Every structure is written in structure tokens, then in C-alpha cells.
Image 1: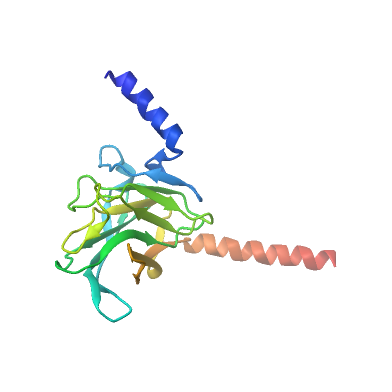
Image 2: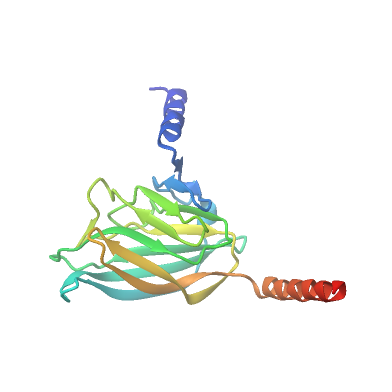
Length: 218
């Protein structure tokens, strides 16, 4: 197959499935996630400015542990000052019965996002797609996770990222949710983008001016 034919076939596949290739993810949209690297997505790379590790358990209603592991959460700042937010499941305990179906996080309302996973980072299972809620607040990565039913105990995920146009963030300001194929889940606090202080001040000033205009009309 020639390169031109391959591109045409890929475009036809995108039209038939209704899902774009990984990249900008608009509110209510969905993208296929094939993985990317620093050469293809330089905007998603830069200086590490925040790192946290959270151990977690996902429990059955009986109290039995179904999945146990660690969620690594990172924030990178690129050369333009824009932030990328990463999640990865590592160090999971083998021999348990839970299987992870999806990994999601909120806190992206109002921001432009470019979503995929890192080919040049460690990890085993990669997602097939990413979806964004209609209000733009939540992004969720889901399988088939390398052609199987999900991420099994003892396995790791690839490093999932959401690159944004935000330049400020706050730790523990949003929730990452890890959900099993059987519906059980755990919520973990993670960093998320926030408006810069100057933008907040402008919003406040705008509100004051609008109030003044309304009072003058009365």
C-alpha cells in the first residue's frame, strides 16, 4: 500500500467511525488514541513542575479488595508556559480480581485540550480512545487497553496526558476516577488547571462594571 493510499484509507476509517485521531478534544467529542512522542507532540513536553503518587484500593461491596495500585499524577510546563496533565497507573498488585475499564479526570471546563498517551514513556496497557463530557469538564480514557478487556491486576497503564492552554494549576483541585469493568471505582484528588490571577481579577472587574451599568439603567 502506498503512503497516499494509506492516508486515504485512514481518512475513510475516521469518517466511518465518527471518531477523530488523537489531538484536540472539544467538549462532547471523542478521539482515537494511538500514542504520540516528543517529535510529534512537542507542546505536551517540557519541565516537570508537579508530581504526586497516591496508593489506592478499589473495593467490592463486601469489603474485598478488587484492585490495588498507585496513581502517578504529573504536570509539565512547555516552553510557552502551557501545562500538560498526566496520569498513570503503576505498581498494581497481582492476583486480584478487578479489571480497570476507564481512567478519567475532571477540571478541564473552559480549556482547550489535546489528549493522547506517551509512546516514549514506560507502561504496558494503552487506551483506544478518549472522550470529553458535553460541558468540557471531564476527560475519560477507555479500552480496549491493548486489545484485552482492560488493565488487569499486576499490570500498568501507559502515561495518559491532556495538554492544555492553561498556564496555572492548583494541586488537589480536581478528581481522577479509576473505574472497574464491574462498576466499582475510586476517586483521587489531583491537580487541575486554574485561571491565572490576572484573569480572575479581570473577571471580577467585569462583574463590577456590569453591575454598575445595571444600576445606572435602573
